[in-house]
Amino acid sequence: MRFGDKLIKLRKKNGLSQEDLANKLNVSRQSVSKWESNNTYPETDKIVQICNIFNCSMDDLINDKVTDIEEVERKEKNNLNIALDSLLEFITKTINMLSRMKFSSILKCFIEQVIIVLLLAFIGMIISSIIPNVICKTLNFILSGRYYTVYNVIKGLCQTIWLIISIIAIIHIFKLRYLNYYDEIVEKEKNVFSRKVKENKKEETNTTTSFERKDEEKIILRDPNHEPFAFLSLLSKIVIFFVKITIAFIGLFLVFTLTLSLISLVISLSLSLHSLIFAGATLTSLGIIIAHIIVLILIVNFIINKKITAEIPITILLVAITIAGIGLGIGLLGFKNIDFIGFDEKSIKENEIDLTYKDNMLIMNTWEHNYEIIIDNNMSLNDIKVRYKYNPDYYKISYSVDYSYDMREYDTYLTSTNNFPKQFKTLLDDLKKNTIRDYSTSEFNNSMKLIANEETINKLMTNFSKLYLFEQEKTETGYKISNVEFRLEEDDQGCSAYYSAATDTLTCPSWCEGKKEKIDTSKGQIIKFYCATSND
Image (cartoon, rainbow, N blue to C red; front, side, top):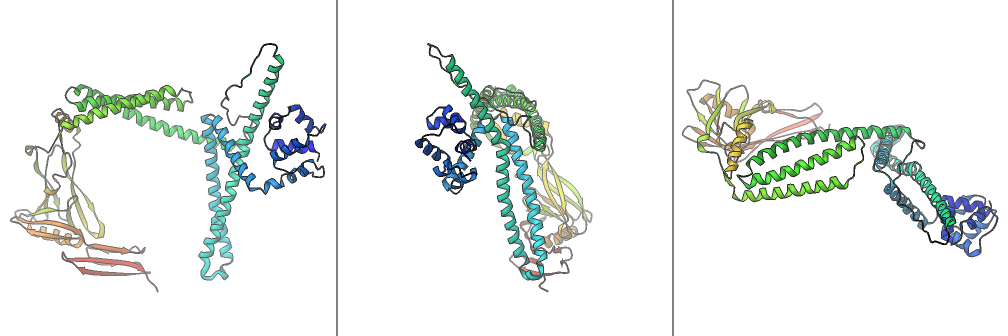
């Protein structure tokens, strides 16, 4: 291969135009053209510079007996510094390309890479599962007890090899799909620019003129004439469609919150003269509304693929955040004069629900566990009353039933009545007076009373003692229950053991061995049970 032919291949392989190479060598483009057409040879110092540029020896470059361009680059491939330079060049080209791509093109590029990664990962999972299985089952007769060790080693080896192959494949596909095409665009732009420079020089007369290169325009990768992977484009469109659907749902949620913000604005505006809290809430609501509108406009334009200048929306969004922040600060200043109060004693009443005793039934105060038992022998057998003291405008008594360990555990608690209009009116009235109530149930959780005749109480507490340890204090009307602790300790080692507190029995599968023991404590006996695989 002659010198000119090798120079052409080396130049193109390194992504250089004749103009680029000429600039590096401080010669004219015509000189490079003559060298490549084998009409002339460069001077010795230029040959040395060419060797340095392409990282090859002078003998390889000018020796016509070297016919393979790979031979010219053999030293380059074995040079670690050149490999590092190649990696850095790849990264630089990628960054340059992304900086010139439109956002939609970047998004498509990213989605395609993610899809390729997922496909390769899925294939890798199949390969790393099938190959170790086939090998280990084939050699099972000689593996003996080392089957799983060998299996894991082979699986790890397969995963490592496939990871390396996947990384190479992803980089190569990315290079073919994008970087090479980007190089073509850049080469065309350089040629166009060089041609315009020449035309400009020809038109120069006695007056001095200049030609400046315009700012680089955004490019679209890829155009319809360069789509080797149509399925990736289709998948990209599908993913983008679902992204738009997701953002549309987010937009609907923002419409809902915008509506709430408008309601909040109207309410706080009407009350802004009564307190700094409402004045701050007015400004905060206004800022939130403006931010909602801007975000919704951006969402709509994204969905319909309409371009919009980002500077104005971002500026308005920042102003909205500033207004909301100022409003929040004013509102917080208003809290300095707030008094925290409880409910009026007149509004607190004792209320109760009726229950009927059933087999293996017990009753628990869910949040505090402590409660008072009242014995009322005037009540019928099996009739039960659960009583709490609370404000009925805000709370009501509720319960849930847990059937664990073959017991019926009624967990009672206070929950909201959801009487929002009255609660909201009370809240506004309180804020006008610069007061806030404690709306939690903590004030009333300890007020639970369990009422039944003595026989029903005895049955309930017998069942209660099957699951819990507790302290009992005698009172005039019954007794108080306190310091309640769960008495069962389970150590089930994957055998699905089942303990029945109703019958005090432990059930284990036939291939497991179970054990139950009772340990004395100051409060009573703790029941510990476990179920483990039998060594037999």
